[in-house]
Length: 348
Ligand SMILES: Cc1ncc(COP(=O)(O)O)c(C=O)c1O
Image 1 (tube, protein in one colour):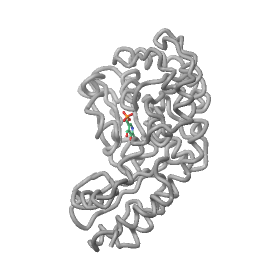
Image 2 (cartoon, protein in one colour):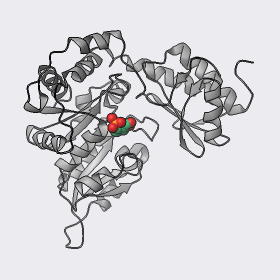
Image 3 (cartoon, helix red, strand yellow):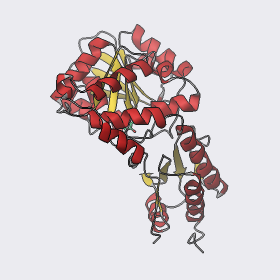
């Protein structure tokens, strides 16, 4: 077993470096539930500005951000339209059903964007038997769809349709900065046609904790109320907001390195004969189809010092991040290539 391992399980595994920790230690703080934490206030102002929205609220996690945004824009009994592979549907413990009381209606679309006729059909008419279609959600980048970065031209027709039919729109932008860097556009442009957008600091941006939800002032007031109701009102949270501010200043442009490293891994893995889906690898997530059981591939890779996530019976996921440089990526790719072809220990 190698002494150090290359951890490609997720971009959530990063730990703050000395610069970020110093910024956290210096942070001016106050009671944020009373609106008195200057560093949280600074972060919220900066995120509202970066996302082109009136207001922002700092929340402990992406899951809480999504749930508070869903709850703030729906009533119990409403229907929310999401992609079948959306994080909100797959990984958030049915929070929107349990807490907000909404029904999730899933659609299946390329990169998580439904075809227009499919979305059109899914939006319910006014009928006493039906739930009210109230909210349409997109995810950008899309985690379970290989880190797909969805550009404005593809989002806009769906969000226009949703708005014309009276729905609001939420974007789960946990990795929206990855999408913006990959597409060479601003995060504000990607969020422009969405009423609310959540963004995580604790993923590729490398902060230890936290997300933010942006929107107009009225909806963010309501999200803030939901944050408190969910137990997410934090007190001297400026220590965490300082890490997020540091990440915004230092770790956005470098996401391009993570994307390049992901492509590097995908290239070597493809050379070994394995299929990568999508083969283009738009951002920092590489989904690899495994010729043998994915659990076996993950276990063998781990023995060789590379940690990956099992996403399905024959799918593993590798995620690049600030804790993995080009040399690590190259080494990880070689090990994975050998494991995938069953050609034995990488050190031989
Ligand atoms: C697309 C997406 N949305 C939301 C979340 C939830 O974030 P958190 O783990 O901070 O709750 C994740 C986490 O990986 C994610 O990938």
